[in-house]
Length: 446
Image (cartoon, rainbow, N blue to C red; front, side, top):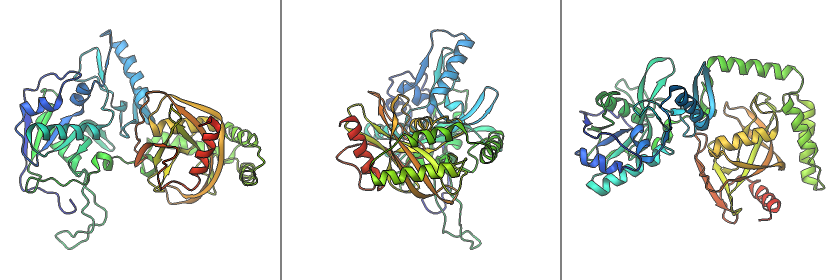
């Protein structure tokens, strides 16, 4: 949908009588038996019932309020990959699904007093599955929007927004079209799925036990616009977010950056010198790279911070699966290539290994990773950072093994995340990746 997304007429229809949903329930069958659907309808379902059906619940042995609050805080810790802002016990965070919201989406409302609800692991996949199952049961082609209740910067109150989308273009793009006055629309993009989510909440509400609604009238000839991207277009990664931190947190980071650039080297800088110095080698190329690292570290006490414009150290990890037969790669949105996991150092990192481990866990969702403390190697490459500044990354590269049974979860900073066998790496990899993979195989004897 590239033009105006306005519909001539819309119907908002609550789906009533659903009742309580339990882990293992067939959500598609429940919706199909309570709703009359047509081609082109949008089925809007709260994440709470999706989570219940998928078993994304924390069930406690006690209804004690203190026990429940302790469990809630522990669940928030487990679901969080980045803290955006903190005020007392309230935390605004980026969670595993790439959403920025209060309490990582861990919810104690509309559940039993000994339960907590977590968000679906992959809301887009949940939406796609429900859509396909409704098609199989009813023979209709619909869109599905999974919603959650979120607050908004600069605005009071909460609204329902889309966290999972299937069969529908989530963000419409009228750029290049002209308005009624002949002006060319240059920047406006419309979060259509969020508008649908909020509209549906007018008939779902929060207290009436109506978790599903139908939005009818958006389709043309029974067909909805669908670019196949799901809800990913709604999530803005931290690197492209102008408000990636709360005000107090941003001020604190700015002060810390100023102190780092003018004061003595931080512990991370000393660790970087120690780590790089220990990587003595007889290889001429590797020795030259090592010397470049040491020279840069000697020249810049702020070499480990991204605010160091001439260049800065980064930390990355090549994650190997438990069978030692495949590596986990991410499709980097800025460079458009498959690369290992990694990124910038942060103020809380005491060592380069700390930085690599934090980045690997944030970008993969894998909590259990076993790291080799000795880096696989070093690399220097030019890059344009998120603010358009040309710089260089001095990358320290580590190796880690994932735990058996652990399932990676793509972060909002990645276009894709996949396991690739050693011998079947994708064609669009960074130029130095094959050398890194070869070093990893030699290290673990694979």
